[in-house]
Amino acid sequence: MNKKTLLIAALFALALTTCKKDKDDDDDLGFCSNYATEYAEETNTVYAAMMAYASNPTHETCVAYKDAYQDYIDALKKFSNCATLWTPQEKANWQASLDLAEDNITTLCDE
Image (cartoon, rainbow, N blue to C red; front, side):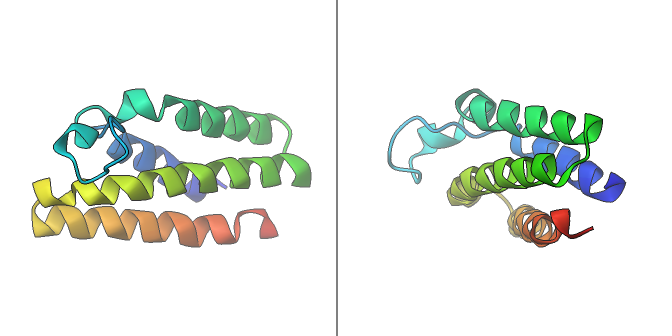
């Protein structure tokens, strides 16, 4: 779980830097201005589920953590539309982080 927890922390740090869901149109530059504020609920839900799983590592708490984290990843995917503001390398790094997070989430409760 340590590698997966570190990956989650890294993805949080990356995601909490710049984007905001300001309108329904995710291509709007206003969407990309303050991400952390608009997705605070998803962030808090994942954190609470992660802490619950860490303090009581049962299959049920793992599944709750996995579900919360998948919801968070799904929310982050909208941030990919902000990539027009990024360099090609930044966009590639972002996509690689999302792909790695989804790969790790797939097997999270299989241990």
